Length: 228
Image (cartoon, rainbow, N blue to C red; front, side):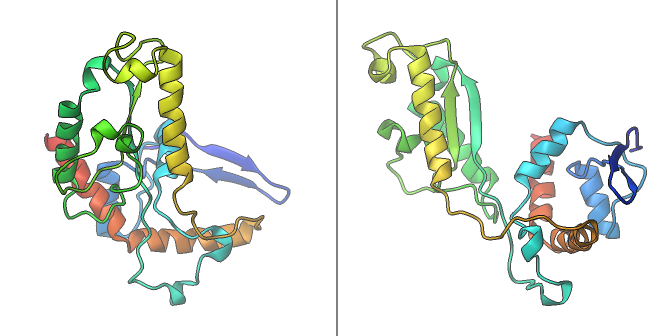
C-alpha cells in the first residue's frame, strides 16, 4: 500500500493534513492487529469506501461520552446492527425458495459470530409468506425490487396487492425504513468539541477498536468471502 492523497483542513489555529488510509482493507487490518498501529505507506480508499466504513463502524460511544482509557471495560463489546439489502432485485428472485436459501447461507456464514445480524429487520415482517416455519434465526435481510418493474402481473403472485411498480418499491422501502427506525437508539450525546478534545478522544476510540473482537470477526468473514 502507498499514499496517493492527503486531505487538508484549515482551522483558526493551524492547517491540518489528514492522510486518509484504507483501514477497512483486509491486509491493513491484519497488519494493524499484529503491530498495534496502522502503517504510513498504505493507499487511501475512495471517499465512498470511507463513508461506508464510517457507517458500519461498531458502536463506539459518542466522543463527548467516551470513557477514559483507564475506565474502559474490556468485557463490553460494541457492535452495529447490520442489515443486508439486496437492491434492484429481479422478480425471479422474490421466491420463498431463494429467500430461504439465502437465509440458510447467511446462517452458516455468521454462525458463532457476535455481529448483530439477526432478528431485527426482515422482509418477513413486510410479507408473511417469507416467515420461516422451522426454528432458525432470521437474518436481517431485505429485498428491494426495481422501481420500474412490477414483481408480477396484476392479480398474480405477491404483486397482486401492489400492482404498480413504483407503489411496490415504495411500500417495501417504507417498511424497511420503519423497521430500521424502530431499532433501539444508541446511547451517547453529540456536541461541539475542541481540536484537542477530538485528538484525545480519537486515541481512546482507536484503543476501543484495537481491543475489540469486532475487527477479528471482520477479518474472519473477509477471508470467507475471498475464498468462496
